[in-house]
Image 1 (cartoon, one colour):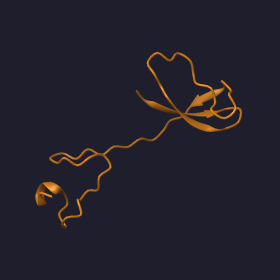
Image 2 (cartoon, helix red, strand yellow):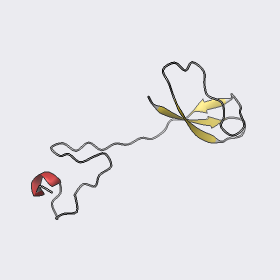
Image 3 (tube, rainbow, N blue to C red):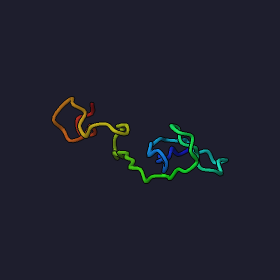
Length: 75
């Protein structure tokens, strides 16, 4: 389930809200309670490294040697 970022058009506060597939209405502002909110376009990121078991956000090299990736140094 995605988390969306919203901005209140009344008090200009920004907040995040988990969006459930059953939600039909926009959330209310977490700060002032207004229903006048707009969903923002948010940046997201992930890292996919092929041939390795590195997790998302891991550095390109493992720090165990000077190799560019762990598949060549086996750390």
